[in-house]
Length: 204
Image 1 (spheres, rainbow, N blue to C red):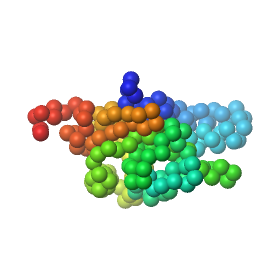
Image 2 (cartoon, one colour):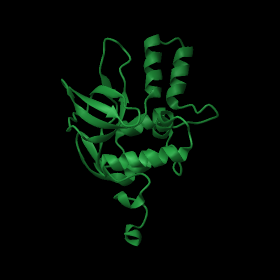
Image 3 (cartoon, rainbow, N blue to C red):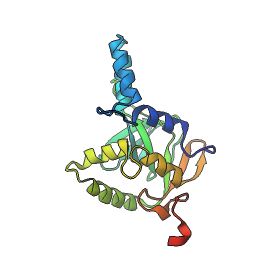
């Protein structure tokens, strides 16, 4: 923002690690990892790329601070991360955010890293988002709720597929500050999003 609600950091990670192609659902990231390994790149480099490939967006609740880091708890998985946020976002406990986190995978670096500028959900409430996930995950028909959530966040859902979350951000954008972008609405309630393609006047 203000050029686009899709931040550069969000777009780069989405394009590199989330857009699948082919029978094996490869991404640019998995291809880079495979080629790097085949060319004999340093194992640490290959491991880093593979870890990046495993990342995905998620919805997190701000649970306070750990020194200079922010503690986030993810909805559905309930995983907690003490996270360094390069954008400078500090926020307040209780904030709900759409964020991509790279968990720590080296013992000498205990903190996770926020890989994208945080998207703060201005509205609706956490309860409304929990209800959204309940009905959306139920509609996917899987037996593993956590795995269904992770798939939804990584690859999206109909009708937009892998563009599901980028479409949501584009239509839900409401404002921004240098360290955080603000969103309103739910993915499956068209009139709740400020820039929904649905004619709001016809349904309000």
